[in-house]
Amino acid sequence: MTPPLSHRTDRPAPATRHPRQPRIALLLLCLLLLCGCGADHRFVQKAEFRDSREIVITFAGPVDPAWAENRDHFSVYEKPDPDIPAQIDRVELGPDGRVLTLRTSEPISRDIPHKVVLEEIRSGGVSQGTAHLTVKKLYVGHLFSILIGAMIIQNFVFSKYLGLCVFFGTSRKKSTAVGMGVTFTIVIIAASMMSWFLHQFVLKPFRLDYLQIVVFIGLVSLTVQGVDTILRKVNPALFKAFGVYLVLVIANCIVIAVPLMLADNEYTLLESLMLAAGAGLGFLIALFLMSSVRERIEFADIPESFRGLPIAFVVAGLFALAFMGFSGMTIY
Image 1 (cartoon, rainbow, N blue to C red):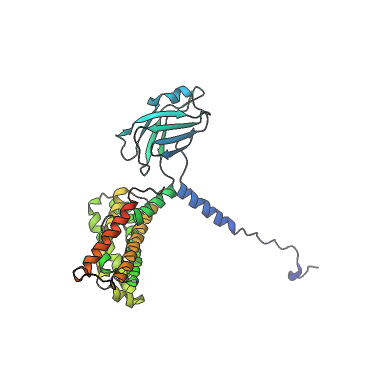
Image 2: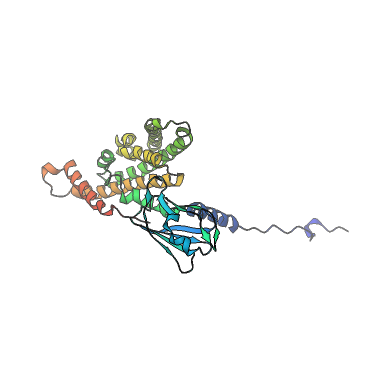
């Protein structure tokens, strides 16, 4: 007699769930995208900068000392400018024969990817072929340096003196300054991402680069109009506090300069996002610092001729002098 369905024991076992597997796969994919791949040759394991004058190359096996001693087998040059090679001053081979150090006579910029050519690598008397290697920063460090560089080291307000109209107009109170900084960050990120996609998939393929300024201004105007409409409905008080300065974002030099920099430097999507976010956050920092000081200045005993914009320009100049201390600094 067939037992009831509720008492049958031949049911298939429920599938075992592994909720962590998708997370691990996603983490590995992110690490692969951020950290990049290894060297460009099967016999070369790694090529990296040691400092501003040394490049270290790690091989899969020991190379012949006679091959390593000849400096004519090596050449180093900047990837964007291959016509000007760097002068190699010394070549050092490690005791195990697997680590080779190239030292240049002059410092090289680690912010720019470099090409290293190793002609006819010889290991055990056998040629391993010629290697064309690309040496650059770890991609995570490169993205971080772009973000911090645009935010602090090369602040668009205090270092490049851009966006001063909106900067002085909305930095009287902290509430208005923070609101404008957040709004400006949203606008510049949205406009920069749209500009990047349009440049990479429309202007560049169809050779319409000469229309960059016109197209980018149109995208910025569209983004500002969208933020204007949303802010009018969501936060009327903040919209009223902005006044005419929200419309002036369209003509802000920073929001136009960032898309042009992305196009000129051929940044990737992540690099463009870091630059846009750094520029927006840097503008927010500048507004917050300036508004904090101007709120105190309102109650200070200042000569009549210096009240208002004159003392604001003096304070901005002092901030610019302070930010000059970051010039030349490298984060990674």
